[in-house]
Image (cartoon, rainbow, N blue to C red):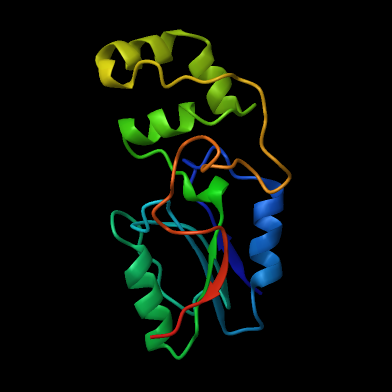
Length: 163
């Protein structure tokens, strides 16, 4: 048995990315993690068994999760997935999201005008961040680099974490 946890503020997550997490997960005991774009947060964690590593979320949870798994003798698998990496925690994250074309419910809500106009008028430095509302990504999910965004977590892909 295992447990997958995802926060509710990752509007660009795709079924393909969730499948990649499951495919990369090793036999128990195992810990697979996807960091946020700034490598501060833990945006997806798959553990087996579910209680193998205690979870703690919030600002700067990614590195403590890696240390907690390693302390229990588990070599974490780290995946860098652009859709899951973009969580919405602050106005800059919203601006980043708005630069990425998508057909998500989040984008539709923002495109309705009310919330987006209020947000942009309160944050004039973010005006002009809205891009087209058509999906131009690929089967792997949104391409942050193509949208002019360079995630600090490096290239998309998988790596083993070893201290």
